Length: 494
Image (cartoon, rainbow, N blue to C red; front, side, top):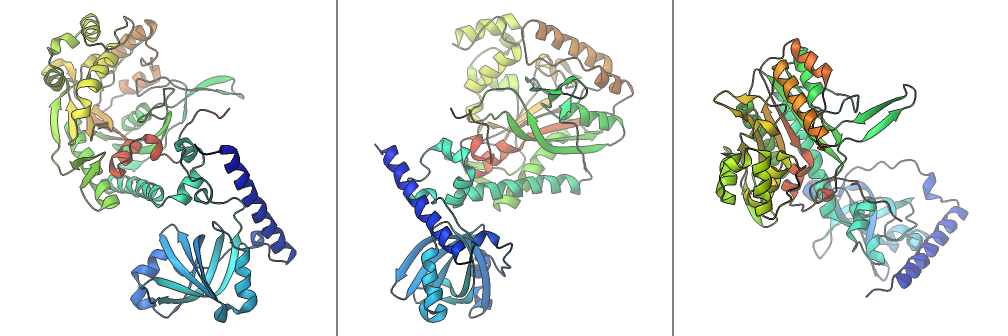
């Protein structure tokens, strides 16, 4: 077992040596922290991609120093930037005695800028032969691989800057995340959707069955809730005549932390007037496929060993049908609170009398169905009793025109034909209030202003929510949501 005390002493010794080098540089009037900019001509990937045109030409590069290899009067070193790696060559006959000796002030992890000539070595390595260099920032702590590496997963999340600097794969994940969000935004913009912003602090939390965080506004002396969804404000905009709107933003839910849940996460919500949940399925397929194509260059991926093909059309299956099939039960047993409670007790699932019907259905679904949904699947037609904001099916009022999309066993969102009957919406809210009084802390509160907005008339509307973090999980083969959020929520260190 590693000796933590010895590792700490080794690290402290390395830090001491690095600070001594910085003091030497400052005493010589070469403080790297006084340099404000460096004009580089290319990044590492450019040099590899365009070597034929750049061979023998002067280039300027900048980045973080990696492994160093000394061979008499020549030193090779790796230079890393966001695009990749390129080799540097320092030679005494190019730099002179003083310039070459100045390399002694360098350490792994330092930020440097270098000018030189691009060439290919005898071993075939694309290399910048340095004619001039500058230390741009001194790393006073050694990179993690220099002492004990990032073996602790929690350290990776707490000190993401180390995780990013040490791992090209981690950097790749977050580059893909950025490309995904850009592709989603571009897809909607090209189809005439208007991007908007809605309040983060709300007097009534709504749009999802979730517990909110509470904050206090001192000047107004009023409590507000951090938004758990953007839904109700976006639908107010549809009432106001903005027929196609969307928002990509952070939402916060006061819930547990797991491989698929973080209290703060990124949600895309989009609403389209004169559309229904069938239109939202087509929109969802198109968005995800465009995001995958732009970020990965393919509609094929592998998630945790499972191959996945995103090519439309995706499978569509009713919730109660697939539960009956996978869990081998009569779907009528999920129609009432009492019968679902007895079923859960029989199957060894939580069956507390105060447990909401929606939670019991979800627990059965998660155990028996969700792990099997590897191929892209729309699970449709949820009970109205667990869909307080969705429109009922005209042919079966007990079911809602609602779907949830799944890829590789991950639930990626929620969508439905939006309920636009203000009287029915009020009745649904009142039912939720009864559930809240019975102990369901996630039940939807009454939102009088939203009902009033519906009374002015909202057209038939389709809406969807997409969990951006989970989509990135699927596209990057990441087992935990914390792998795709730069700064995930963690328990405070003691």
